[in-house]
Image (cartoon, rainbow, N blue to C red; front, side):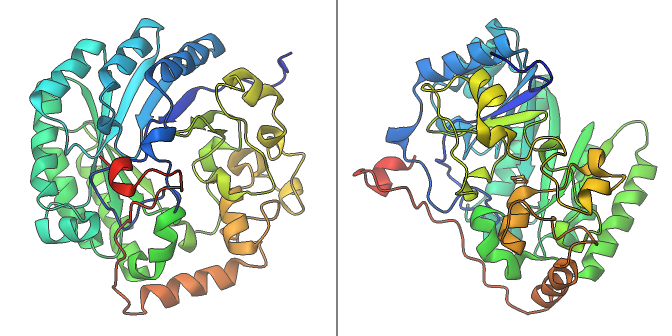
Length: 376
Ligand code: FES
């Protein structure tokens, strides 16, 4: 029985696969990836899409890993279109040739979010572990534009590429891109172990904020720039996922249904899995989804805070990672007893001089299949 006091999700992110040709140092996927043999089948993903539509979901984000590593992607997009869902492809673009893009356009794809690590090949290659990626991404961008699809350029910022922000925004404007997402690295999964090497300095942060403001002014009316600040230098937490289990859910490659990308680090919660659980039952009935939904779970001072229905208590996964308790204050909040410690950590790491990046390893959960079989 659905609880009618809970709104249905607006959007669902389908992590179709953890396979990916890139080896990004800032990858936020878990350390142990799901191998190909454990990914949901085409029929399963179509059933997920059917349930999403029945639930009243509006948007589907096809993600990964690299979602284009799934050969059935056009079939899945076509199914999403058939059941009335708006579909967005979140991709690195390096596998996007004319033929494959044509299939996706024919299937009814509505939007593409294309990620960049920079325009300078040396930096982009060093961050992604993929040689020649920047040029491939520029080609992909031209193809998506030519196909007439809506397009968002996503630039993940690290200490290594923060200096390229001006060039990226100029490039986006020259290309007529309507929306750019400048996203500082979120330190979850693989990215967490590279934090000291990736963390931008306070000076870089100030320069980035000024640049974003200047470009917003310069491109007002033709380009929207979303700017995601680095959490560690913030004073008030972000409303992670718009609040735990309020607007969004994710389905992992093996069908595990979670309220956010890093939820499986919360080992005290048991997350439902498709097809044993339906999306509706996960959303409305699962204890894991109700654990931090709304405001009843909040400790003080969150519970008495004016912003409690704005930030929804911040990020539960970050509270666990940095304060050791998913039910306590997100240390990004200036009222957290851990806040000063977190800011000092960011300052120290950003000046550590430790620039050694560990590129993503494809470390798959043990299933009997080899990494090579599980990879692309
Ligand atoms: Fe899980 Fe923020 S990533 S709540």
